[in-house]
Amino acid sequence: MTEQKDDIELVRGSGNVFADFDVADASLRQLRAILAAEVVKTLDKEKLTVRDAEARTGIAAADFSRIRQAKLDRFTVDRLMRILDRLDRDVRVKVSVAARPEHLAA
Image 1: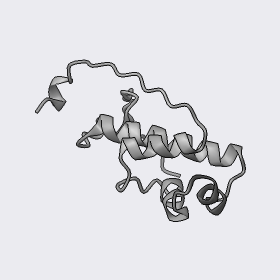
Image 2: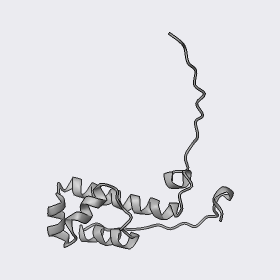
Image 3: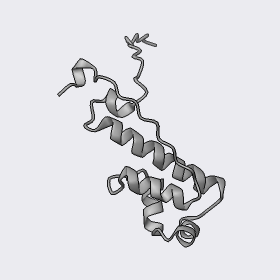
């Protein structure tokens, strides 16, 4: 057998995968992902199908399917918060403002 040695570099992430990959609107995308994860967690915890969630909230089952599939382009932060509200969740958002790292500054 041939021994192969790969050089592996370990890089600590920022906590925001979108920012780590220089994606535009990284903070917004991160917030939407967090809110969507809370929707999915609520559906799972309460054992709601997308149809059950539609009946309970009046929001289309297709929207819950999109959220489960992480297809979030159609969802604003406001809309995701409204969905959580209709699922009887209390949503609190804490905002902190900091300077962008130089490599991300526009």
